[in-house]
Length: 69
Image (tube, rainbow, N blue to C red):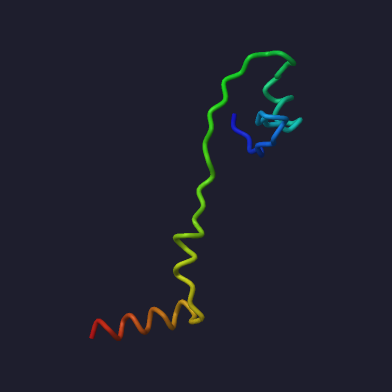
């Protein structure tokens, strides 16, 4: 099972806190060894942010279609 959490700074180290519901569902115990796989969230602002326009989607499509004629 996967869960989302945020990395926190603890002294000179980093750590994560698992939500209570996740701990209960996975039956995790204190001092139990676990394997953690890190998957970063994708930041799509660079991709979709470059497509900013004040025109509606329909007006944009109409202008593109004009170029095909």
